[in-house]
Image 1 (cartoon, rainbow, N blue to C red):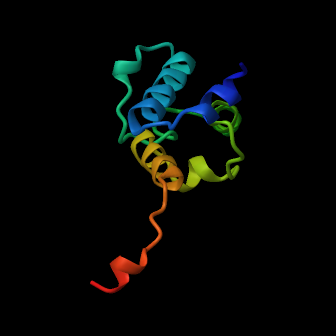
Image 2: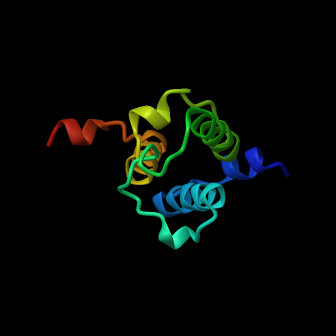
Length: 102
């Protein structure tokens, strides 16, 4: 089973996504993932546009779906990006007639 199929087969949590992002950034910076501050921007870590584009592309493959190329600029921290991706994939609850009559 490919990485994309594995990601699609399970629901990714905030912890899954933030952990993956921290591990990828740590690998680039040659530090430990626990040294990554989730509120520090990707730019503050010194990631250049090529590294950010690579991170975005790798993330797209890992989550198993298309992502906007500007996503890491729109949500420039691990915390914001992970929270956005979780919110984006959260199941929506359709109102039922009983909810409308309450």
